[in-house]
Length: 63
Image 1 (spheres, rainbow, N blue to C red):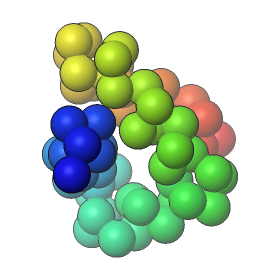
Image 2: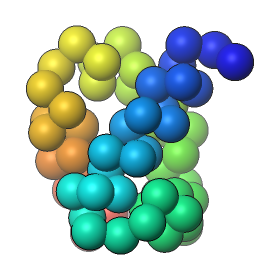
Image 3: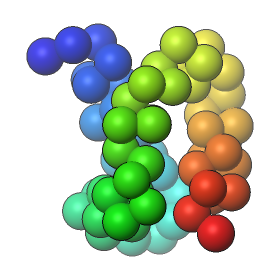
């Protein structure tokens, strides 16, 4: 498993907590907007910033 995908799993679990839902619901929301690959591809930026910045970015894209 790549480091990018491992981080995505961590991000997904934390993002689900942020949303107050389960990880599978958070994943479905991202998948519905075709944001799963986007989130994985954002590894270089997301893993060096505060995780809340990733949440804000994803929140903005889910609207």
